[in-house]
Length: 112
Length: 112
DNA sequence: CCAGACCTGCAACCTATGGTTGCGTCTGAC
DNA sequence: GTCAGACGCAACCATAGGTTGCAGGTCTGG
Image (cartoon, rainbow over all chains, first blue to last red):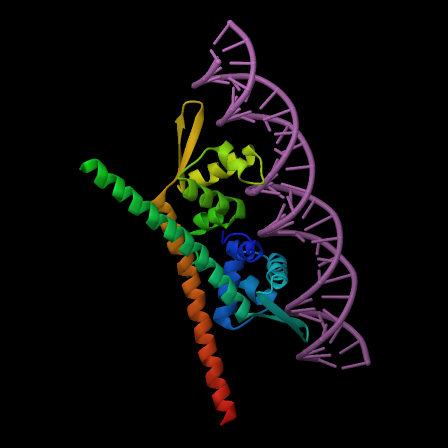
């Protein structure tokens, strides 16, 4: 199947805003809801909700620091997510290749 | 950025049900809304909506055949989707690797 | 030490989307 | 010709992404 256990991670990473947030956190080495919202076309509250989602699946981890709360990417979990992405991609890729082989075989048969 | 143009394809492929539908269509070499819904935990109408979404981004292509409508995967478009998936994965992977290198460098510096 | 600025969290509200049920319609088979 | 099967359309519900507004902590300047 390859598509079953990882729905949580997928849907976390499936949102465009959350993907960009992960990108930003990786690029800047962490950030707060406010700093992220300044680099995104959404409000701080929307970012905060997304951080909640990402935190719930363990992709980010926030620590209070004075009056702000700094978030950082959990590298191990993101690595897992990447693995699952490429796993699904590989599955589809394999099926596409198989289909192509079959199609070619049929065509050869018809041409003969 | 790598995360910008492909939001349509991503969100199409981001839904678990739609991913499973693509899986089923690939495995069976096509199918109808009814046959798909029999293999999924959702109703035919839900499947029909998803087929609409997938059709709108060009991932599937349906042709009426008598009283049923047969859908098949557009291989080229799915290949594009796979490419974009692995592209994002590769980007994150690269960033994770860079971070790891930097972390190791810092640690070496501290240990000296 | 106090006041204002700043960042956070919580709540209400709006909209889109995934899902359901119900119904009308068309096609194919007997 | 009729009846079952498959479809499309419409109404409706729940959840998720997004917004605004507001109250509460924390730092900083006077």
